[in-house]
Image 1 (tube, one colour):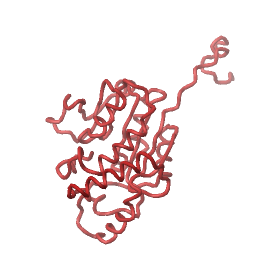
Image 2 (cartoon, rainbow, N blue to C red):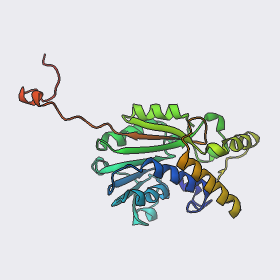
Image 3 (tube, helix red, strand yellow):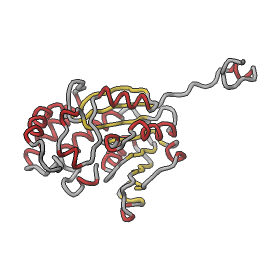
Image 4 (tube, rainbow, N blue to C red):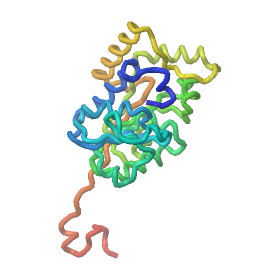
Length: 253
């Protein structure tokens, strides 16, 4: 969760965060149990801590360069840090990039820096805002660089060294309303679109979108695009290359 929105909404009840958490948990249902989770650009750490129960994790590391000194340390079931070294990344089985890559100039470079250090088979879950046609003052407020189609974010994942297991959109059911609203508000001062709603409306949206994310694979349109990737497993060297004194497996010149 972006730190800028922490004072605006409560992610433990707000429809947007609760519905997105359903999608993230669905993407990791077949992950191995008891592993280290690293939540990159974690903000409040909502998603890292939110998936922890689903993977019976022993460690959640929330990484964000914008943490204050007071936010650092281990609390609320996670370790909060401004950076993480390759040795720590090499222990993870799950990397989360939830609404992070749209904030940086070099999205491939940031993602690759983690993928290269991660072990083979590590799962990587990525979400980003979808479609430049949905650009609004909300993106200005959050200092986004871009929005993506699912094909574009899948290409970023591939360029960073991941095998893409799946890609799809989230929040498809409310996209038409969001598109109209953002067109009407175009040119307004930067501000977040996420605000508290009356409790009955919040409950309806949360349940409706949680159902969408649990049961519908939407490849057409949405407010967010999701990619589920995996670092390729490195095949062990062929025994014949070891016996021949050529452990690299490259042809001899």
